[in-house]
Image (cartoon, rainbow, N blue to C red; front, side, top):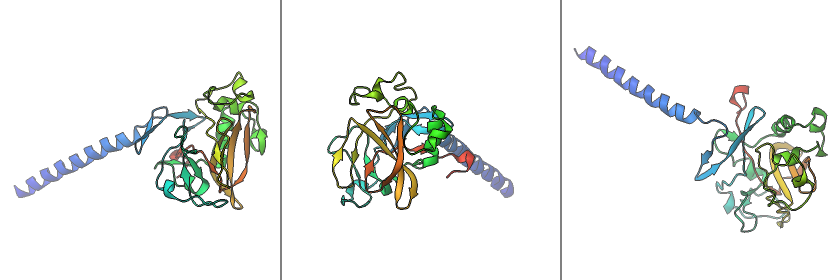
Length: 234
């Protein structure tokens, strides 16, 4: 009798465990790209481009980097708003950007950016170039014509075609000056090379995208991309 009772109790406990595990696991894995991602009180739109899921707006998460003191021409790990303006997410120095994305998401590497640019129409030859490259991919990635200063980017017939929704959040230069809101959208990649990191930049006067290495003491916007577990990326 006692043995039967123990077996029944074990079955009940295991059933409860697997029910909790199943439903909790389903809740955690049921996120589908295109839904909003909730993180630390903020809500982010998402969009699938190519075979990857991207945030469709700039990251606003201050995990403590906002308490870091800015040091001119040094990557101290600072993050903060453009002056006191809270629209369009935070700006992050590169080391801060590397730590900022939510669990299950990551700062996209240079190759991931190139895959996205290829998915929206950039040629394999252009995607490997540096500086201004491609055709109208910058316009396709952008949104909010009223946010951008006048120029070729918003005048393109392919403006706002991808759901990436780039906005001109500006930057903080290595000497501490804020600049170029309305003119530039700039993002870090996770790829470092010889003490610098690859970045992407859009400009109101160009329809294409700019790729180059930059000193990590600058502060730019961050877009996170969902970790690609199917292809072994962690």
